Length: 206
Length: 206
DNA sequence: ACCAAATGGCTAATCTGATTAGCTATAGAC
DNA sequence: GTCTATAGCTAATCAGATTAGCCATTTGGT
Image (tube, rainbow over all chains, first blue to last red; front, side, top):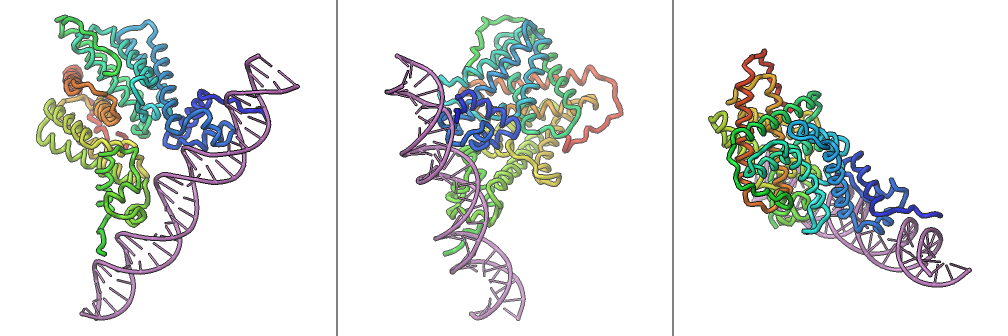
């Protein structure tokens, strides 16, 4: 009988698809194996265990999320970049509940964990969104963290089903992004003093 | 040998204290039992299982969170209420990682789940914070959802350890709250038209 | 104080799902 | 064509949640 031809990537993608359907908390080696037409122990030839698998899903998710945002803001800047980037992130999360939850639950295993690179890619995308606004360098980091907080907060609620069955959430989301946009423009206007532009080191500091 | 004298509440509180120390993902009947000086199966006389226990922790957490916010904004309004309420929520989450994570993971079991009441108490507190700002009734719901998103987003990141070891997070937090505050005042100023004040039904709609 | 029903806590057994051990056959290198 | 590395299998092990059933403590009525 021929082999299934699995790889770590294959397994991870199958698992990601699975959790998007049944929810991250339902992740189980059995279900993944079944979906791949393979017996459970076979998976251990490709991933070291369930924890590792969840971790890989998280990395996949963050990279895909980063890609989605990057594609959405291609060349745009300021208001438009913010709106499109935010929407991109939102739809990504809506379509991939499970893997975003996985990313949510994942914890980096060390300083050179690929998960960190993936996270940084996302953060860099957000930073790119902010570029259009001429924000006081001293406030860059705060603005970036706020953006992260808002987008992650929204995604997190969406994933958890926090916004029950309300139909007008779309409106609320765009309202919120508008709100942020206006505020950022204010921030630009008021602080005309240009401090020594200490680059707000994106990366581990987030 | 005398009895331990446990109750559902006792068990829940012990479990909540436990997860605050070791993390919600480490919750286990064995650990809870050990902490109470009792054998594992004994717990089942008070809670129906681990799921039920986690659910109870969530309810406890949300009620305590609501209390903390309520106490913090006593009588205050507007900017000050926002600042104090937000800080209260923040410190609560910082001091109770585990139980907030539990609340985060919990899903209501039905329409009359006490968890919903608890959540509503929190939402009501947030709504109270917004009262000071004379916000256009049509935008109330959006502002409320934004507030929820921001506070939950922040809490969620704090719980997950998302903000690594950065020391200046306190600054970022207050900056963010200021940002929201300014924006809300703008919102007030611009929309002077008073629509029929359709009360933005707090509750299940969030 | 005494007794009976109710029930809290225990031990032992069960179940589920992850993980490990060890075997065999396939796939690719030569 | 053979030879090695290894993907996938079955069977066994383990960990942790849950259940069954026993017994002693409580508690409420007398």
